[in-house]
Image (tube, rainbow, N blue to C red):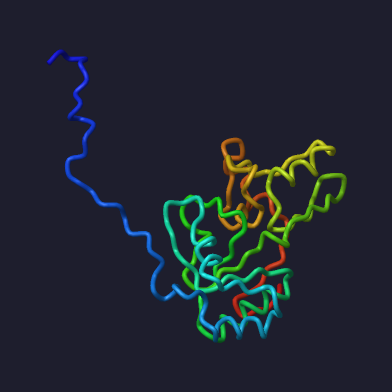
Length: 204
């Protein structure tokens, strides 16, 4: 066979492969358990707890190749909701994962227990000191934050490739930087202060 002649056999897999199973685990087949749903609804109020199987599957994937189905999804509206969920989970020995944009390539936005949505009600930018500082909520995209700073000739330090979709919460949690930021303008060097909620539910 001539050196540059295509070899059709080279394009065929070495063995037959079956599709990977993609079935929702039996544990989640009926959605969130009634007890878990009622406990969280009693703490947070109606409309903040998602437990249908369609909701769980919708939050089971992010930009990574992984898939973990949560047992329940909480749509937190404010810091009091976050505090209440963490306090509840701490007392029950449950795990909590926070999710905003879900642009993670390594599965950080997925969890198999309590998943908290901190994007829907968590966007907003307040520019301070002529653009030298800004108070930015975790559900705000990097592009939106930079648009608010642009009239002042400023941009954020981190410059992730997914800036149009990723949000500040994930950027800070992962110490994101980007091609133009390096180690001198990454998230940790950009943040001056932040409000955090400890696993106990204490706000600091």
